[in-house]
Length: 194
Image (tube, rainbow, N blue to C red):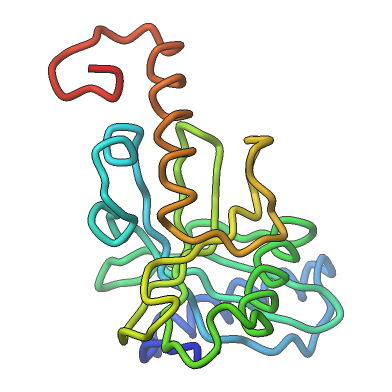
């Protein structure tokens, strides 16, 4: 699968590198980690999930997630401000799951020959994060959105499977409506359970 990464900001790369250097200095990370291209991170609320016809129609860009690989895999989110800030840094299983999802996509026969832009989707109300593949070109047999819900608590979703967006979205909408009901928020017109 041809994965398309957008140009990165030198200021963002420097901010991520500074965060890595600090953790190396504190001996929490090994030196020599290699920085990888970042992925845009989009946030969706429960209302957006329920009203959406696809991820592409409703996500809000909130940050860029940078990765560094080597002896330990590390990720860091950089905000969108003109003076970038490192807002979080992670290493361990969470980062490994993200990178495993990317590798799964690169080796998937279902999407071979389709140009795709990888993005990360966070749905905090469902405690879900997934790798979302946005098609940049139309191709027979797979021209829609695809996603791998690698970090989730929804048993119906296989975190090691590439899901077509049309298969995944109805499941997420069902869970969004249930989460909204459980939140005990007033049900108003346009809410997920309306």
